[in-house]
Image (cartoon, rainbow, N blue to C red):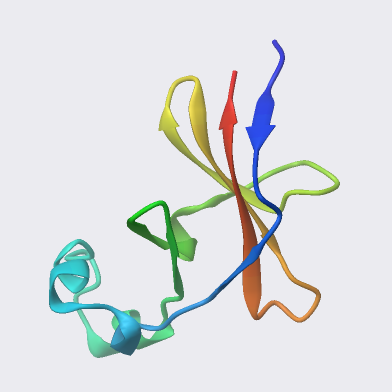
Length: 93
């Protein structure tokens, strides 16, 4: 099975709970305590906000983690050298 990856190779900043809008915070109702909320790290991609803890390790030499969106597609992330920002891509198979 061939996987197609689309990215613009731009790094996106990591954001914290305080950077989220009230509506965005409501999407993360599984973060019940302040410790959970303030230890989580997020990023924005294509009008969505993602919690990095919801990504699984990707056994690849370039991409670090992924999150499936459908059976055939999902999001890939790659940390910068200092792990302060992410490169993000969409994959399709």
